[in-house]
Length: 263
Image 1 (cartoon, helix red, strand yellow):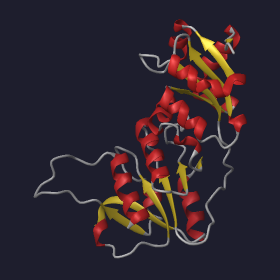
Image 2 (cartoon, one colour):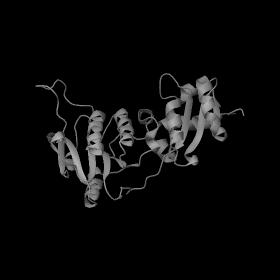
Image 3 (cartoon, one colour):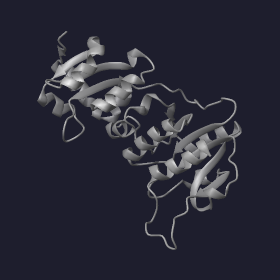
Image 4 (cartoon, one colour):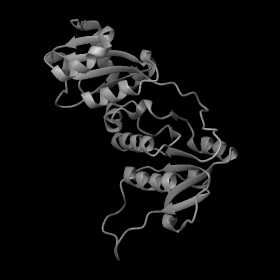
């Protein structure tokens, strides 16, 4: 079955998904690259979450994968791929997906152990996507994003999380400290990273329910959130003196998630 040629009107519509305002109003997002699109399709909570697959002419491997989605498959030219691409070298396959709806409040209320990650004004889309993917790996129950955190549907976030956006419950809030206070009332301990915190290796045990807060790359965790913290922890450096200013936010998050999830 030959893919349908994408119309000019639809092309313009999909290209506009590079704009956050348009993504939010249409509740859609654009993904690029075979690995990313494959993972998104494998994790679809519902087939209707896939709106369209756009495959560049001559892309054999991508075309083979897309055969399973013939009713939503469109062909695009080299020039159209360049318009759709968020990278300097278009990868030949694009997916248009619906944004999952996680109503607020969507706090986990399961019995037993629970780990939630909260992002406090993280600016780098690469960090947001990497933390999201790492959270899926370690079985985190949800991810909360402050209003100042990079858009979860930014193409760079989608590429960094490599399709994990459907595999984890996530939602945004206007005031992060209000949501953390609500979770405290439900039995969660708020754990923040801080240079003034206790060495994380010194804790013999962790609370059963934890919200791990990862702060802004430059300024750390905000004062309003620090004021709520039940635990302040730091990741110690090796050697007699510090040779770098700090760890990357996504690296810090991964170290602490591993300890909280598997320790």
